[in-house]
Length: 531
Image 1 (cartoon, rainbow, N blue to C red):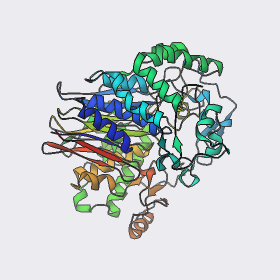
Image 2: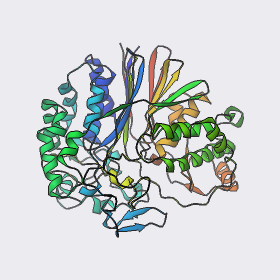
Image 3: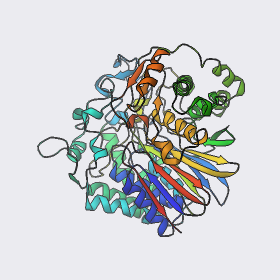
Image 4: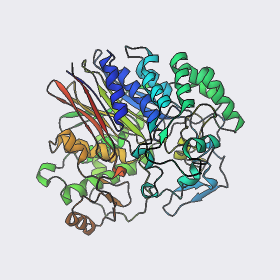
């Protein structure tokens, strides 16, 4: 058996593979790769972020989920934005001045360091060693990669201006953030510019030497808490000190004779979609046929509608009701309903993911994010915090209203598929809500159509949350016309490989070896370590 690391960033996959070569296991490699992602993809993730991992411990034959979703700080109030709430043309709500999307008021308690520490609890190498590759690249510098510059490019800025500021404004949220990302002439940095971040390197060096507790209860925590207090952030020193990763059970469903195991609550939408499609003979319909895409889109539309029932916390009783056979049978009856002509804004394709397996059969599928990023950088620390508060309902008294300690409802869904008791494949994706449609359709391509891993992640996809049906330009014109004739309002994106459709990072068992596939919709790396 070999080891393997798959990630959107080649340098991150390489860092994880180097740890495997040094005798580390999948848990060590995942931590090293994740810290490298934090260093070289700083708009998608960072130590100020949040996330979730699903892990398989081959020695214990145990599958668990490590929840490090962000929680609301104790100083937040449900009515704190009363009088500032506005509605967008797409029906979304936002807060005047984008106060829930950028700045200190937008930050959830950062969980990433706690989550990576929980993954490392099953590792073999010292914590300190796993941060060194990220520290080195921040000190030496690296070119501004094209995938970072996409964030700056207006062509890639999906319709978010009505609830998130244009990049030109966002980049000036705080002086430290502007200092990191603006040239001397006041213009954003460009592809190829050398990026050095000695402050971030020093922060990671402190984490390496003092351990993860430094971020929550030590010297780093003191700096973070003082900065938050000075700017009226909702997070206190006590909130940081209380932050822990939660070890919880995954949720699962049988599909085509395989057990699909994923993380709650985000993965519930994947499982519901698969359940709604369980009696569809995809092989008879044909891959990417109008009828196949119509059924997938209709199932996604229904399952996304069910997400409104999720309030944030992992409510096991609710999840069981959503997967109950009688409830799924009721939803299945709605598959042929008239397609609604709703408008819906599309979220930008944020977040990142990595998937790792080692020679012993241990697996880590880990998704982490900054949401869209708050634009807040504490002086001297060099990293940006998340802006997860933007995911909450700014109106009080509702299921997703702001409440201290409440977690955001997330689409992140690291997934592992089992053939009997043996892991067959593992995958996850960046892409905001398109994480769900990307993982679902990749599983269909693998389990229904028998595509190879690379074919499955590269195949054209659709995305639907209840509004327009989003297509890539690779969708045949005849197919698009047929879907429109069935009542779908189409959003044909101007990209053949559209990052809005998610970027799946997949590993699969092929006999006694692991093979991998990184989604070609953006840079990707597959690093294999041969025994």
